[in-house]
Image (tube, rainbow, N blue to C red; front, top):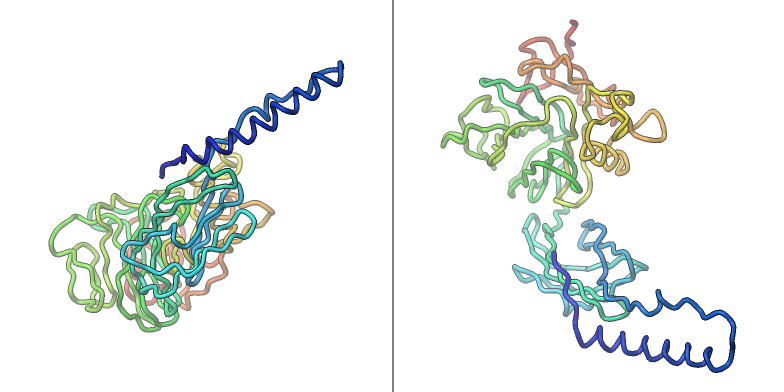
Length: 352
C-alpha cells in the first residue's frame, strides 16, 4: 500500500485555504487591536490521503472503512483478472464496491484510487476472493498443537452440511491477523465428510492435496477417509496459546473459530494475560464476530480451551455429535492414542 498525492489537487486546495486565511488576518489587523486568533492549525493544509482501517467481503460487495469520507468512482477501480465494478457507494467513512460476475473462489486483485474532499489520493491494491453462495457448513472438529515427529500438528474440519469449497479459508489466527492461511480450491463435499489440514508437512512428493479423491495422498497421518491438504511451508501451530478460524472466503463471513490457551488473566500485566498483542487481537476479533463466547464483557484466557493435557495423540476434540456452542464446554482431551482424525470423534476423556 502506498499513498499518492496529485500535486495539482493539493496545490489548488492549499491555495484556496491560504487565500481565505490571508484575508482573514488582514481584516483582524485593520479592525481590532485585541489578541490575534491562533491560526497555526488552519495554516497547515490537509495533505494526508484517507487511511484504510479495514475491509470485509459481504456477498458481491467489498466494504472498505477509512478514517474520513472516501471519494471513489467505479472507473477508478481496476481488477485483475477483469471484474466489473457496478457501483462505488459511500456511506459516511465506508466505501462499498459492488462487483457482480464474480467467479466463486477466484482470487482478484483490485487496484483503487481513493481520494478525500481535498483531492489527496490513496493508491492501494486489495485482495478479493469471488463470492461462493454454496459454501458448506463447516466446523473445526479436532486438532493437535503438541505435534511430534511422527504425528505433526493437524486440524480436522467436519462438513455438517454439503457444498462447494471454492475459496473457503482456514487460518492460524483470524482474517485480520494471521500466521498461516490455507485457501481451498473448488470441489464438492457432502454432509458428514472430513477434511484434514496438515500444518507441518515434510514437503515430500507424496503429500498431495486431495480436491476430490481422498485416497490420493500419502504422508504422515494422511487418511483415506478424509480429504488431505498440506499447508505449503507450514511450521506447525502455536503450542499453548492461539486461535484457529474458518471463513467462507478470505475476509468473508466467519464459519467457525476456536480459542485455546493455558494462560490466565493474571499470567502477566500485559495483553490481558494472553501473553502477546497478536493473540489478544485475534481473541478479540473472534469474540467480536461471534465465533467464541466469554463469561464476562471481555474475552479472557480463562474462556479458552486449555491444551495443557493434550499431546500428539491426545487431541482436542468436540463430542461425537460435533456440538457447537462456541465455548470451551464443547471440547475435551481424549486419552492417549485416542485421536480420531478422519472419523467420528471419541467421547472418552483423558484423566490425568
